[in-house]
Image (cartoon, rainbow, N blue to C red; front, side, top):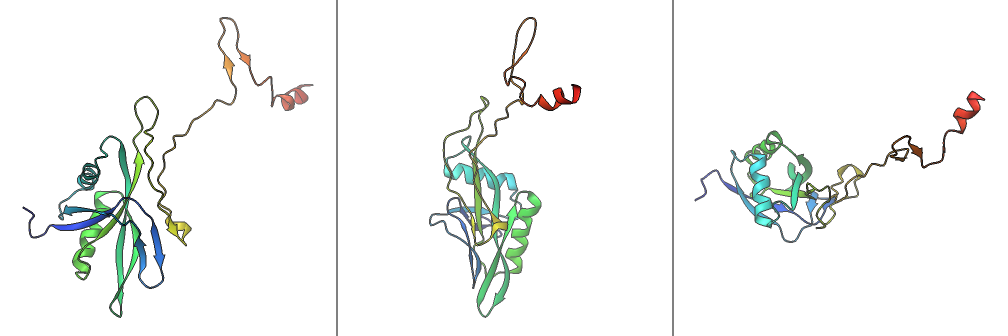
Length: 180
């Protein structure tokens, strides 16, 4: 049974972050999760709860959360901003704001989900909807499914007695001119 201090948090996992003139930040996901938390809930506990409820353990991971943080009340309208939550300390801000703004009964988070990279180096092919901050380049929340691949500058062929430059000495012209 949930304790008196427990409360529900809406966790959006699809959709985007929109900037509204009157109310500030709004999340657009139409099907958020309901997660019960309390002031002793850790960041890792919240991540586990979200992934378990989505059935995505081992497939996705939460890179970070975006919190729809209340900042002011103007004429019966709450104004919101966006705060990135990536640690226990950041999560405590949500609990403090809940005490400070009792008018906001249900806090909202947007989870940035990314693929889990397997031990073979590949990533799962599950796609996540892209979350972006409309009208604001400083609040991008893009889900990434790519893994960087690094290629050596010079490709060498292994041989018992020597190595061959497959680029045929491209880029060595300056060196030849300075020596000649």
